[in-house]
Amino acid sequence: MAGKPVTFLALTTAKDFIASMRAFVTPVALGLLLIAAALRADAGEDVRASPWREIAPGVQAARGDELGADARWGARLSLVDPAQVQLSVQFDPQTPRIAEWRARNPAALLLVNGSYYSLEHTVRPTCDLISSGKLVHGAGCHVRDALYLGAQASSAAGPAARILTPDEFLASDWSEALKSFPSLVRGGVPGCLSAGYCAESSRTAAVAVLRDGRLLFFATQWPAVRRDVARFLAEQMGAVEALNLDGGPEATMVLRGEQIEESVATPGTPLPLMLAVLPRPPAHAPPAPPAAPPPSRPTGTSPPATGAPRRAP
Image (cartoon, rainbow, N blue to C red; front, side, top):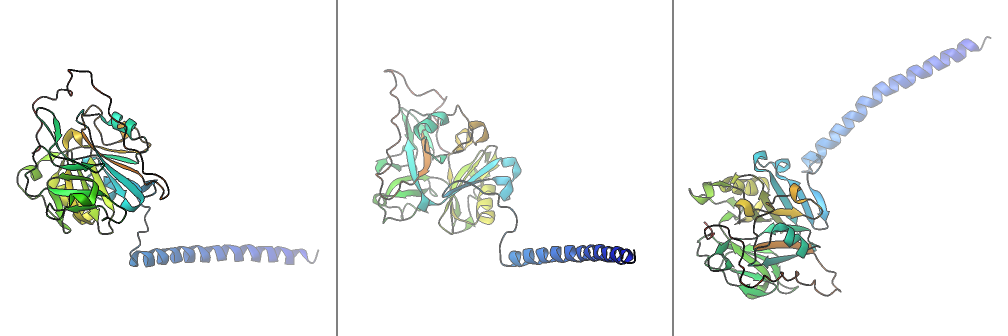
């Protein structure tokens, strides 16, 4: 009996000790975590969860509002490393819809609409483009601030994907390229300052080049003012160069594995020009086959009517 009070006292002392240690350790541990987070922030590391999700090696996607874009735009962005993918510029005067483009490019990681097209006697790109090494002349693209996107070099030793002025662009350097307008960012400075087209509110699509050489594709499901998009790409996303693509109902961005309803797209809209981001074939593998040829039309038919000839602004 004499030892029981001692045992009780020992247990009581142990419980008090554990409780006091918990009271001490918890704020210390929390303080250490806060100090570690502060040090990471000082080092330039973003301690928040990244809004970017990986679609495939070399391709990431995020919502615009998670990156500082106006939530009313309904913007989607895709970050593409040209060293890890293959880019293909595709043109079809039969004006496929997005579902047809997906069927032709089943391996595509990303589909984005291209530049403008013109409807006169036939469907033609407004500006020149190069598809599978073949130059396709445009109907007329005499715009002062039109630029080229060199998407895929003609050889492995060729230049990396980039945005170029007409004076810098050499067709023989590229197997895949397109021309569009207007420029949105030049040398890291927002452009598109005109009082007309750049001040209009419309669904918008664009491609930009970042400082590290990656491509940034941008598209909105709802209207946006292009000069505001230019500022967002330069100031929020760090774009060095950016180029406007066709917009309005043609603005399209569809990622692998998502439903059309989840994408930036208008299912019934004709899309003669498409830019496909494809997996890069292994070095020892033969080049990827071209996209499936379009189905032939019955004799005497023509592309679906879309009202008055569509001209780029």
